[in-house]
Length: 195
Image (cartoon, rainbow, N blue to C red):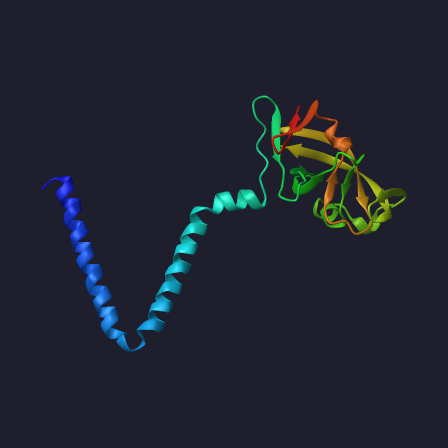
């Protein structure tokens, strides 16, 4: 028996098996066939939806929140534009991952209270003598020295940052950090940092 005959025989067997199951299903549920067919169709669609979501999960997650690429051989990192139009970059600050909103209009690196606490700072014991203007008005800030900010193999030591005393949703990555890179460019829905 060659491969073509083997596949054809299996197909016939599978067809007979499915026909028997469908016949049994119809005979067994002949009194409520309409409702049963609706339920079978609903479960079939749910099953297909789960399979489709599982198969497309990488594409879906990349669309919802695109991920930054690793530092390449040319010393560049590509930061894709998020659906909200902003660029986000995850850095290791004092060996803890912190997600930053890249803000080329901001002068400094500004941490939220929660991110500051996560990297080992005590926001309640900082000296908030600085002032900054935000979209929500003036806020008080406290200067802090970060032991390290790492992006892959690129590590910057002793970086000055500020902790915002007000309510801030996202830590900001301003020009104090970005100017450490030799070149910044935006194109093709990505921000490219070059060391």
